[in-house]
Structure formats: C-alpha cells, structure tokens
Length: 171
Image (tube, rainbow, N blue to C red; front, side, top):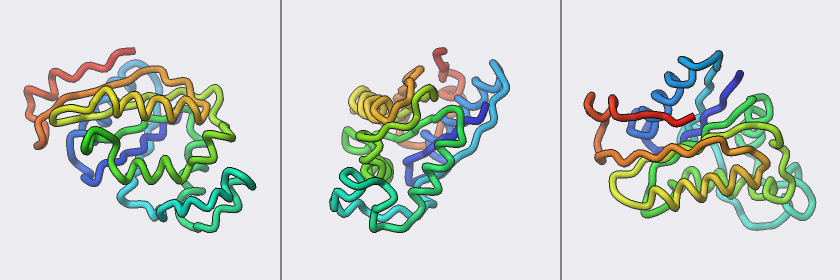
C-alpha cells in the first residue's frame, strides 16, 4: 500500500518529521506500506490569488502554474495520505495553509473517496486540538476517510530518546 506523507514544517528534521517517521515505522510493523514524502518547503507553490477560476470553472483553469498538479497526481496515485503540520500560532503552518488553499476547489470537487488518511501534528505548547480538527475537516471534505489523528506535545527542540519511546500510534 502506497502512503503519501505531506509535511508542512519548514524544518526537515524537526519534531513533525520525526513523528512522521515513527508513524511510518509503526505502520510498517503492521503491514506492507511504501512511504513517499513531500516536504512543502521544497515545492514551488504560488500563493492563491483568490480568482475563483478553480471553483467556478475547474482546477485546470487556475492561472498559477507550479507544483500543485504534481502533488495532486501523487495524491491520486497513493492509497493513503498522512498530513503533517506542527502547530504555529494555534494553527497549521503557512506552508500547509497555502497548500490547502491551492486545493480549495477539491472542497467542491472531492476525488479522494475510498482513500484513507491520518492527520498528525506536533506542538510545543497549545493549539493541537484545533490544528488536528482543521486538518481532519479538510481531508474529509476532499473525500478521504480519516482513520486516525495523532497529536504530540513536544518540546520546541529535537526529540530526546526518552520522548521517542513515549510516542505510540493508535490504530
């Protein structure tokens, strides 16, 4: 089963990435999963202009030409999705928010029915519940069946070995 993991953190080796890798390990222990990672910080996604073309006329008429179509193609090819974002000021990061905004038309034209998703977030303090709910709501509107939410409160610095042992993923 192919799983696409989209990470909205501006840091590649931070807590959110470490949590995603731990989730990957846990899932691979339970079945045959192949993971692919997209780091939004490494993609070229323009900022949505709010022109409404994608919603009124179709996503292919978006005037912005960037990596959105490539990411959506990978989402179509994958059997499941893991959406990952740390909490930034009580919400997803700007990278993740921009990605979600660029797929706004999928809220009106969902295509991911029958695909499974997991939402994962980390925080150094607060905002975890709101962030997980937002990511869950969005992925469900896109058509995914959200199987689980994973939220971790972590120190705002890289994981310690003690903390790594505490992470448990619910299935």
